[in-house]
Image (cartoon, rainbow, N blue to C red; front, side):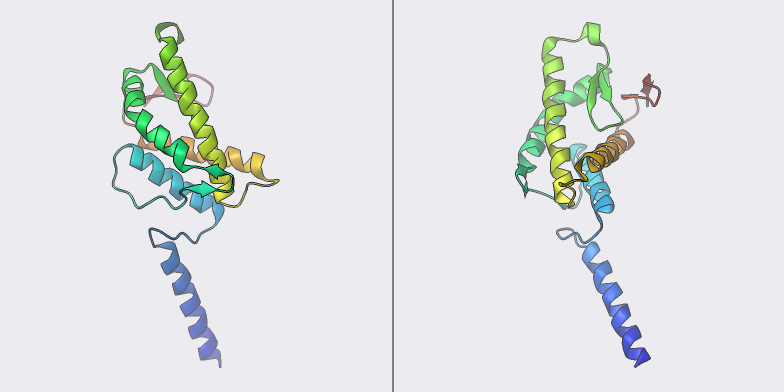
Length: 171
């Protein structure tokens, strides 16, 4: 009887491990799902060959595919400004204008549009991992920080980010 219970336990553990490793089905807890999504999405933006995003399409009332498509279309244009140091990354997964006095109103609008889409996408991520209810505000902070870390980790040398004390730091 003990052997049967051990075998059943081993089979259950192996089954769960196999489920987590498939590219199209993600069986994991919310924090890990968010980290995987951040790594894959940001990698996708930089042209990496990544597995499909675990959370795509409609998440509750939010269709995260729409803001994601706009973000992907906008990224090459933003990348030029990031490389020139006119804009930089924030810890909460957004963009900020770095050289306020030197940039055009169009760049301010471009950054605003990007940040608006990121807000919708991050909100959709909260819903996707099951935190669209009373825990939304605390979970939204975690999602933003997780994506902020992913953006900063994947960004190339020379890009700017806002440091922990509010100062601009070059990678």
